[in-house]
Amino acid sequence: MSGNIKNRIWNFQEKYTPYIFLLPFIFVFCTFMAYPLIKSIYLSFTCTNGPKSIVWIGLDNFIFLLKDNNFWTAVRNTFVFAAFSVFLQLPCSLGLAILVNKKWLKGKNLFRFAFFAPYLCGTVFVAVLFSVLLVPRFGLVNRALYFLTGYGLDLKWLGEASMVMPTLVLITLWLFTGFNMIYFIAALQSVDKGLYEAAEIDGASSFQKFLHVTLPGIKPVAVFVVIMSTIGSLQLFELPYVLLGGPGPNQAGLTIVMYLYQTGFETGNLGYASAIGWVLVIIIMSVSLFQLWLGRSKK
Image 1: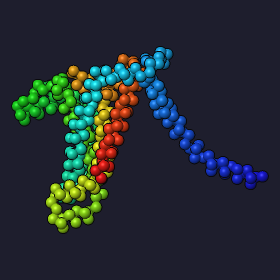
Image 2: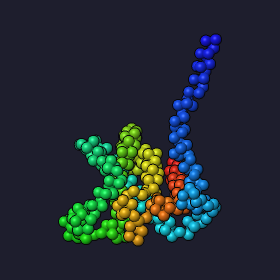
Image 3: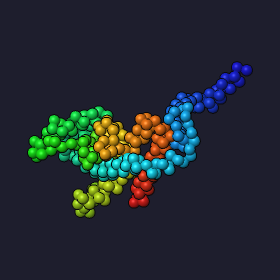
């Protein structure tokens, strides 16, 4: 009997132990991921400002969203920011990666850390830092511009609608260029060196080697970086919210996530905020799938 009992216990452990170890993850996932997602889908079809006042309204939130000028302002600002930040940031990241990957460069590790260090500061800290650096007349940036050019002492980086978006793009460029540089360094180091030697034997110039050897070699990583950078840009919130204290002059810094936050947590319209959130999910998925398809189609 004792042998049979031991066999049963062993069979039970062998069969159910993996599921027992998965229980903590399943509990956390269902509590903090699955339930909120399902609940937000339900709330997007309701009008509610709390658990005791929920009214089913069907697609009215999404219909109103299509007519909401503030939402479309947020969409326009978000896509402008994403386009400029990605198309400026990634070439700079690749250029820095190529530079610090050169054999003749001394102190490579120091340069790599220096370029990567801004990312370690965190978005909120960077927003607070630049809110001080960009103060008109007394900010270090305006002082430096005035010292170098004789102009720019009274430049209002955060007070003029036309300056808000360039300011956000430049700060993001400083913050994330070094981070993406690390990905490109890893990709460059994985390119087969024999291909460069073969290209040199064929008489290829430096630009031709970059175009026909480097770019194809780092393409998978480049596609990944483009997609992740675009997703991060479309989710922009902390930087303009802390830096501007809100959407800024003429809503020049209003983004989709900021509008979602204002609608859900400041106005209290949780149903409409949920609809905005799911439209953002659809936008991110559509853009990401398009970029993935574009990357594969040019294989």
